[in-house]
Length: 101
Image 1 (spheres, rainbow, N blue to C red):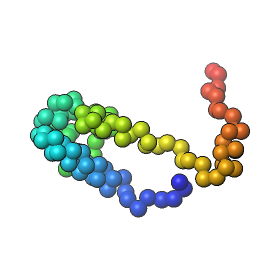
Image 2: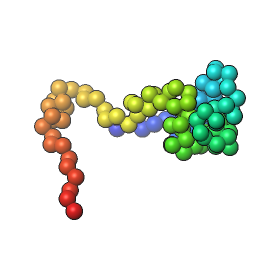
Image 3: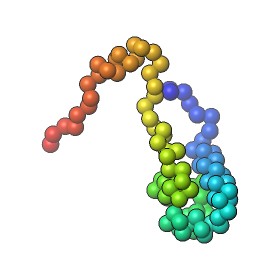
Image 4: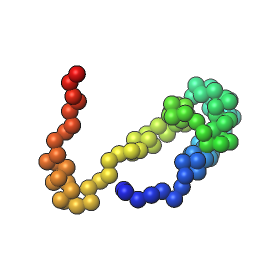
């Protein structure tokens, strides 16, 4: 997709935080419970739920504790081919190899 997003990274972060909080509450967990189960500090979890800001590593740890780590599998996947011609071009393209030092 070569388009543009209508949301900013900050808005997406806040939406993710709201979803994580909703999952936490659906499990009946307090913030301290999720913090302990994930290994993420309570301060980091609070900051995330309030602002949407968190490190990728901590976000993945929270997702694991909430049993949602598989949700990240589709993230940053290459786009699907839109036509048979694109598939044929992709098949002919040689795989990139790492250069030697």
